[in-house]
Image (cartoon, rainbow, N blue to C red; front, side, top):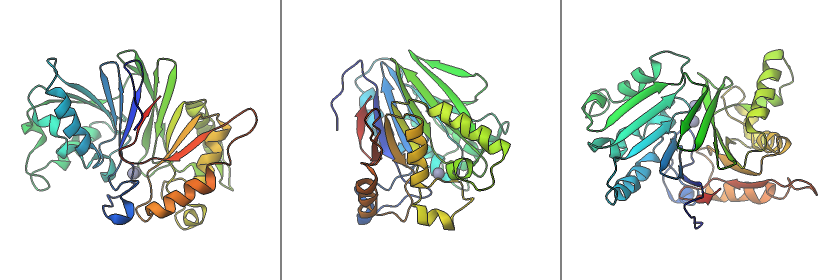
Length: 299
Ligand SMILES: [Zn+2]
Ligand SMILES: [Zn+2]
C-alpha cells in the first residue's frame, strides 16, 4: 500500500482476473476476483467495472460512509456487459442503502441494451432481489456526451470493436494526470495482424492516440505469446503486443490486467520478472507491473 494525501489520485484494484473468478491458493497473491478498479480524488469516487471485486469495494464504501454526513454518490463506468464485468453488481452493498446514488455509464451502441442486461441479471430467476427493489437510487446512462465532468476530473471514452460484442475504454484526466482503463480488446488483431486493412489501421491509430503518454494504463494482457496462437479471435491481447504498443505510445506506467484464469501467481511473477526490464531506454522508461488485487497506487 502506498500512502496518499488529499491532492492525489488514488487507484485501487479490487479485481484483476479475467473471464471468471478464480479463488484458491494458486491465485491468492494476484487475486481471483473479476475486474473492478476504483479511482478516488477530491470527493469523487469512480469505479471501472463491476466484476466480483466490487463486493469488497462496496463493503469499504459502506464503512467510510458511516463517518460522512453527505449522501454517497458513486460513478460506475462499465466497459461492457460480459459476466466478468457485471456479476458483482448485485452484491455491491451500497445499493441496498437508501441514501446511495449510483450512476452507471456504458456504451450507447445498443440502445436500452445496458438497462435490460443489468436488470435481466437481477431477474427473479437469477437473483432474489430485483433491481427495482433496491433502496438506493440507480441511474443508468448510455453515454451520449463526448466527455463527462466529475469534480475536476474529465472522462472521455472510446469504443473498442475488437472484442466480441465490443467494449468501451475510458480515459480520466485529473490534476494534469491521465489514467486509461482499456480492457477486453484484441490488440494483436489491430497491431500484429498479417492482413492489414484500413479499419484495423484506423483502430490502431485511434488506440495509440487514446493511450498516448498516459501516467497509468490499465490494459488487457491476458495471454502469453504462445497461448495467443490458440486464442486468436477471442478478443484478448498477448502480453508482448500490449507491452510494445504501450511503450511506443510513451505510457509511463502499465498495469497488465485481466489475467487469464489459468495463470497462477507463480506464472504471473515469472512474466513480470521476464518483461520488466525490457522497456527502458536512455530517454524513455515505462514501469510495468501485473495488477494485483488489493493494490493501491497514488498517481
Ligand atoms: Zn472480461
Ligand atoms: Zn469481455
